[in-house]
Amino acid sequence: MSLIQQHLFDTHRARQHGEPPPPEPGAGLLCLPGALRERRRFRAVLAGRPASGRLSGFLGRLGLLARRTP
Image 1 (spheres, rainbow, N blue to C red):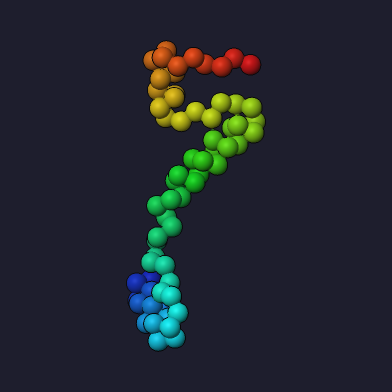
Image 2: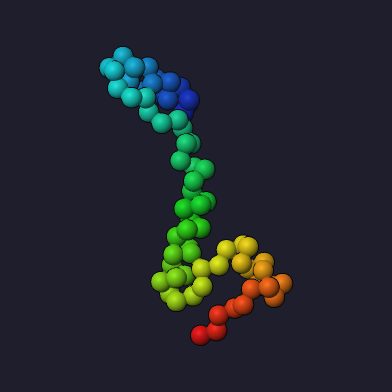
């Protein structure tokens, strides 16, 4: 049974029992990269490093953003 068939089966069963339908397959996968990025930034702050993303890294390379020195 494929993933889609299982989802349709679960949706049908939930509808028969008056329960809310299950989430669609892969619904949580889009937020995974963002969650990993936030975790990496949080760990950097805990370690005492600046939590820089792509934009601040780009501005730092251009010399437009002052870098912190320890």
